Length: 322
Image 1 (cartoon, rainbow, N blue to C red):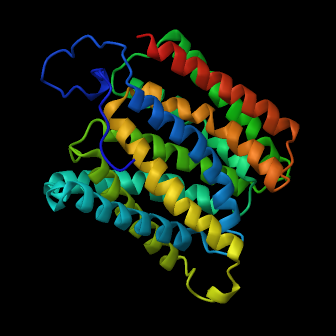
Image 2 (image 1 turned 90 degrees about the vertical axis):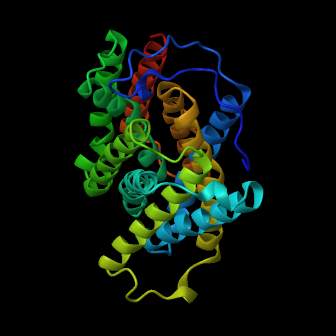
């Protein structure tokens, strides 16, 4: 996506600013551009769990994530300046701070912790754990006074039950419980970032916002990597071509294309609709992990994943009817 597409013809109630009166009644027309963006996020992001797992085989987690997002962010800055002119990159100080905050929440707190976790847990399991994000979003919305539907509450409970089942491999010692905990914390950070992006002053151009988010998140990941000492003993010659290829895929497809699509969707589509990626990504990720990396599909992963996806489906379908 190299230029802004037409926005969905819908007014999002969750973006209504306090004190501006009641939000207009939303229509339900969703543009073709929104469905195209969702398709990109569905498929490409599902494959990024595999890409991350391969990249961290021979690369340090936070430094590789930092490189990924900084490079992708700078490429997007150059692309925006070329296609829309340098003026498209101008933002206020408040907008820049908001974009940086969201970028740190999404990419350092959310993605960075998943990258670290995938050094010790299967990519498919990580994707299934991330699928609980819509449940956290419902909880956050409830905390800000938006009463969830009965179906939304049931979906949250199902999602948490599935999450409990998915932690069993860590409890039994089949995978490291620390990796499971890192992903859960990452989902909380990602949910807060996604929720906040519609309630704070962001750059009007979603592609500009995405570029600044990626640069800020990437610098945050790099800083954490340096603090962790990942640079010590780093031998570039020891990094496999397989890992470099995976990182290049993550830069171009996972970040430049899919993350930009996600950032655009957050500003132009209902949050509940955008959240549907969470029950498509895990299916793609589990299949790719099993086919490419021969990851085992154990009963806790299969059962827990099914329960989580069922909960997310319930949340999305009931919340969208409001």
